[in-house]
Amino acid sequence: MRTMRWALMATMAASLGCGTVVVRPAPPDDAAAPDTAVVDGPTPTDLAPADAPRTCRSTADCNPGEECLIREGCDVPSYCGPALGRPCTDDLAAYCGCDGQTFTGSSSCPPRVYARRGPCEGVDAGPAACTFPDGRVCPVGQRCRAPDGCNTCACGRDGTLACTELACVDAGPPPDAPTRTCRTSSDCPRSMMCDGPPGCDVPWTCVPARGCTADVAPFCACDGTTFYGSSSCPGRPYRARSICGPSADAGTVSCAPQDARGEGACDGFFGYAWNGRACVGVTGCRCVGADCPSISRDPDTCRARYAACRG
Image (cartoon, rainbow, N blue to C red; front, side):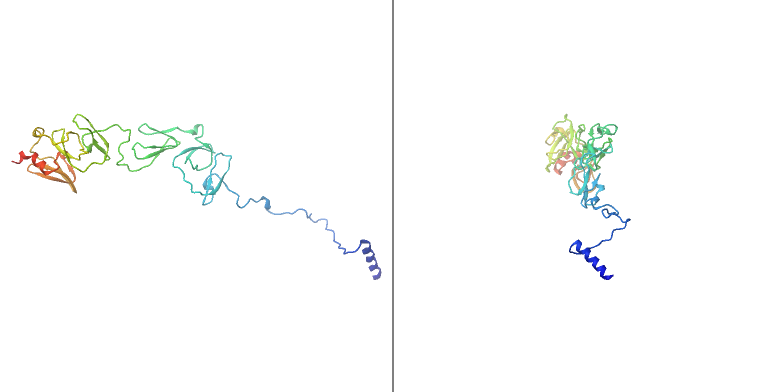
């Protein structure tokens, strides 16, 4: 029996030729087909690249150190990119947002996506300008000088003004303010001075303060008294650049004490005043009294003026 089995195997080998014969068992009928694979989750082809740009609608949608590079158009995607530290202008421009609402932002750095530059049409367009209390107008999205001449205001799309709040004590009146007449510099704002040409029938006006020379010169005032002041800034109207003549002073000089006195513990010096007996210096923080503008600037002039009162 064993001899017949080997003979049969030798006969089969001879009929198939030389070589090794490998017999594989057939797969069972319920085995899965090997040409398909079942994988849980997305395939590698479905995954986005790790460095794919992120879309955004504003910089708030981006990671720290990134900014949203806004592009015009609601159908055009904007992407997050490295924050470039680009400078943005301080002006305000109107944008029509993708939600149909108008918003404002820097004209060079829009804060979020937008359909187009300019206000949205229709009800949301709002007023075209803001109005100042003095009647001047400021276009929407623009900055204009405030009425105080110092601050600036931005006109919002809703017609309201947003103004800076700087302390402008010395700003003076705005350039278009009416001319203000004066008799002395004390009638003017702190940043201005009283100035005008010689002559008692010519009104003086408040003008922006300028540098004055430190010299002292005599002036004949319109009331016939002599006063002293800077040769470039007398500070009050005058008849002539000189001491008033005897005829002018004779009828106006009174031996009564002058109404001028120093007030405050300061080192300021204002001149010499007649106190009814002698000429005395007026010092302090300020000169108080109606005769302060007409007191003498040196003792000799004061004594000469009141010589008749001393004897």
